[in-house]
Length: 78
Image: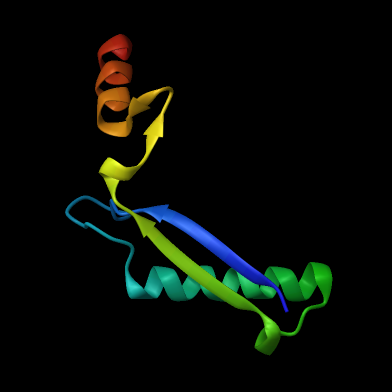
């Protein structure tokens, strides 16, 4: 029985969204489940997929909180 956890940031997938939509989550669940069926021959009904949304302030990159990392990266690309 595979259990897959997908972590996504709570930023949404388009401007003006603050989370991943229900349709996007359903597509992730279907896609991961199908991949496990195709690669490991695990039946769909035996595969569990958990989607965790991580608030922006709860993750970092390059030793910085993500908003600060992005600000610095944008400034260096200007």
